[in-house]
Length: 174
Ligand SMILES: [Cu+2]
Ligand SMILES: [Zn+2]
Image (cartoon, rainbow, N blue to C red):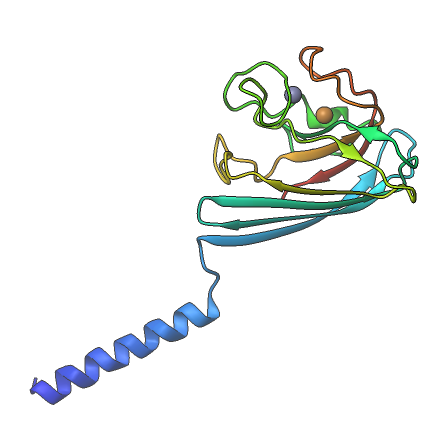
């Protein structure tokens, strides 16, 4: 092969590479959008948006249909199964570190313990949480698990659930 033929081959390969990147998903980035489904006879709904960029994971949620001014336990649960009418199918709190239940940001808490939701005067709560301490995929990852909104506040003390009452909404991550 002449030098120019090699150059042409290299250029063609590079162009194919660019084409492939433009049309396929970047494996380091993902975005999951999921709707919260009402459970336990509630009228709670809303949307989750979980974005990942490398090791960074960010959750944004808008939760509707809450009592104005109310506070609600909010967790990632172990199983991505919202099928039960009371969402018991989602199992316990996601707990990749084998920790006790606690408050997000404290030294001891489940990986799935999230900051509590607080509803505004219209019964809407918003969450904006950096989940970069968690992993995305695999045995220790959050993908394929469930996010649960509870009917009562989390006391951050009662084991292993925080005594946050019924599961009033559920969504599967991914
Ligand atoms: Cu929970
Ligand atoms: Zn917990």
